[in-house]
Amino acid sequence: MRASDLLGPQGPLARSIEGYEHRPSQMRMADLVERTLGHEGVAIVEAGTGTGKTWAYLVPAILSGKRVVISTGTRALQDQIMERDLPALRDHLGLAVEAVCMKGLSNYLCLRRYELYRHAPEAATAEVGKQLRVIEDWRAYTETGDRADLPLPEDASVWAHVQSGPDTRIGARCSFFEKCFVTKMRRAAENARIVVVNHHLFFADLALRGDRTAGGAVIPDYDAVIFDEAHQLEETATLFFGASVSTGQLERLARDATRALVAAKDGSPLPEVLRAAADAFFLALPRLREGNDRVPLEASHFSVGSAGSAADFTRAEPVVERDWDGATKAPRPAPDLEQRFFALDDALEALGAHCRVVRGEDESLAQIAKRCGQIRDDLGRITEAAIGHSVAWVSRRGNGLALGISPIDVSSILRKELFGRAAS
Ligand code: SF4
Image 1 (cartoon, helix red, strand yellow):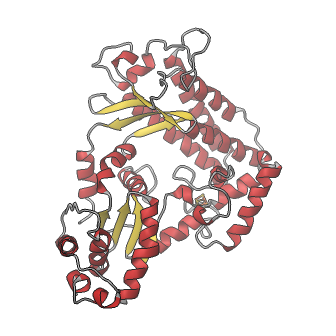
Image 2: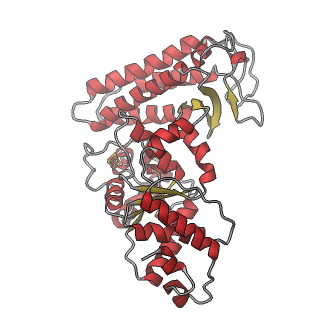
Image 3: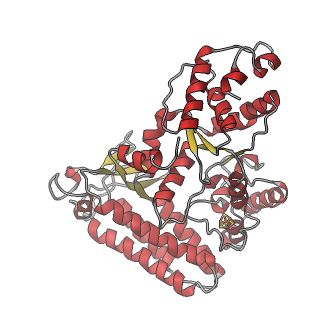
């Protein structure tokens, strides 16, 4: 059966949907998608509003019998495909469509972190206790562990402490692995033909596939990928094929380390040492001015000329007196950025080594040690990359700052990691 048989004026959709509109441009698009899925290669389609693009790729994807990943620009479009388009096609065409929606890991409850947080001293406040009770009830009946179904406000503070994430997930060695919501979601995806993701998850997964040390992909292997709102790809790819280290990430690491060490009855001050070293380092980076969310680290930030590398920022001239948000502070001695960088690296190394020693059977501590190593690697990548191929930058992230590096041109990365990997 061809997609045009189903979408055309004599097809089952025209017969069963009242007011069904036959659209020649939709048929042309469906035909191109069908040929590309059948013969491999790349197709790019630009089509105006009202073409019926979603069905023009969904119908050939369903008929292909291949595992096809549909990647959307937004979670709203993911929901629309799962809740409106696929059920409608299932009903009107009478086709079995095995489809699964995968969101970023931070959308799912992590049972291991939930258990750790529940028993942490800082969770013993009335407000946190109230939110934890809601989660306790919810986790007994939720099938997905998806935050979208949790009956708590969007900004409930407790979620940050119990969500899953690429840097906190342990995987098969976790004692909750079999009951884990992320495990269930991945298994469901392995049995599905259509996997609906968003660009952020798709590129996070692609970056993991390219990094043998990172511990495996999230999305199961696929034959083809279809990007809806593909004009956003360059920006998303740039984000995920760079590296960054943020104040929030270091704060979460220090917090999780404290919690895991307390649970192991270890009162080490090393998480506090890390906090102080991170604060000192980020306070010494070039400032962001009012209304300016990101500054590239350019030659003017370095003590050497423009032919230097991002590593030179560790030898930067002393920067002005200020706070993270750019507020001017009373004059103080110029910070020594290089020393602060090494102090942060030492603090990460010491915390990682300590967690490995205390660890025993405790996978949470092994996970902290691994995160320390990953952040050190990222800091190394950021400071060692040559400026000619990438740009180093400082940017706002949430209430804090991030230091990162981004490739200037993602075309060769996309050719190797994306077009070289999926057949269509
Ligand atoms: S497997 Fe990962 S996400 Fe699942 S409970 Fe364990 S640590 Fe959390």
